[in-house]
Image (tube, rainbow, N blue to C red; front, side, top):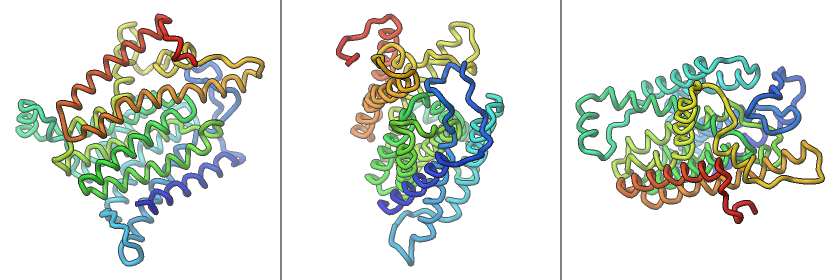
Length: 367
C-alpha cells in the first residue's frame, strides 16, 4: 500500500511539474471579472490532469506488479482498473475541456458526470441498498432500482460539490486527501484492501499535486481535478458500504458533509434569492472567510496580498472539515452517532455562516 501511494505521489508530482513549466499550451485566460477569481496573473488550471495521471497510472501499475513480482495484496484486477479509468473518462475529459476553453455549459458538464456515474454503476454493479432506517431499507429491497439511482446520483453530484469548494490554494485538494485517507483507514479496518488501494492512490496523487498548488498556487486543480476527486471518492464510498455490512451507510455522508452541505445550502440560498443554482457567485462559505475573516496583508503588491490571504483561508476550512472527518472515523460503525453528527455539523455550518454574514465574528478567529 505504501508503494502504491508513493508511486501515485511521484507520478502526479512529475506530471504537475511538467504542466507548471510547459510552454505553448492553448489555454484560455481566466476572465478577470469572474466571482471565483482570487488571484492575480494567469495560472494553469490543468492540475486535474496531474492527479489523473498519478491515480490511474498507479492503479494500473499496481495491478500489474501485484502477484509474482511484488506481494502488494491489492485485490484489484486489471479489468476493474481499466473499467474504472474508462468510466471516469467522460467527467475528467469534459472538466479538462472546460479548464482549457471555459466554454462548456453547466448542463454539458452535468451530463458528463452523469455518464461517468452511470457507467461505473453498470460496470461494477453499484447500488445503495441500505440506510439503516427500517422503512427506507424495506423500500430499497422492494425497488432495487432506487438504490441504483441513488448511487448514480452520488457519483453525479459529488464532483460538482468538490468543484464548488475548489476556490483557494490547497482547499479542495486537502479536503479530498483527508477524506481519502479516512476511507482507506476504515477500509483496512474491515479488510477491504481493494477500496483502500483506490483511496490511497488518490491520496498520494493529490499530495503530489499539492506540492505545486499549496502555498504558492503554481497550478490549480480546475474542473477536471474537482470532478476526478468527486467521482473517485463517491466510487470508494459506495463500494465500501456495499461490500462491507460492518460499515454504517452514514459513514460516507458525515465524511463528505462539508462539500455536500455547501452545495445543498448554496442551492437553497440562490433559490431563495430567485437565482439559478447554476450561476456562480461569491457568497460561498470559503469566500466569506476570505473576505471577512482573514486579515489583510499590508505594504505589499496586490498580487502578493491576494496570494497570502488566499493561503491563509484554506486552514480555516481544513479545521472545519476535521469536525466531520474525526467523528466519522471514530463512529464508523454507529449509524445513530453518525446521523447526530451530521445534524450537528449542519447546524454549526448555518450558525457560522450567519455569524460571518452579520459580522459577529469572535476576535480570536481573526488571528
